Length: 63
Image 1: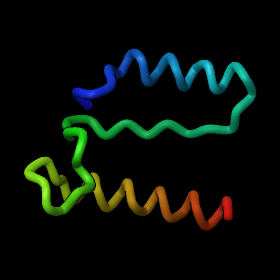
Image 2 (image 1 turned 30 degrees about the horizontal axis):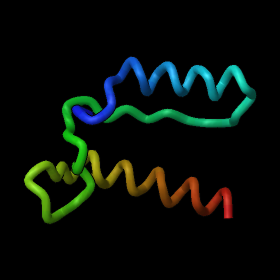
Image 3 (image 1 turned 120 degrees about the horizontal axis):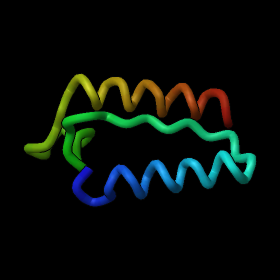
């Protein structure tokens, strides 16, 4: 993602883990920031499908 460098994301995730937060990090290589938005040129159907599946699974487990 051109909006947030991987180093920042990975460092933030490491801080979560250090603080005992039960978190999962998913990185989608080669996709742009708006990859889940069907009406955007950055849309990537394969990555978007996986991201939405993971999101729905998380919500089902958490709510």
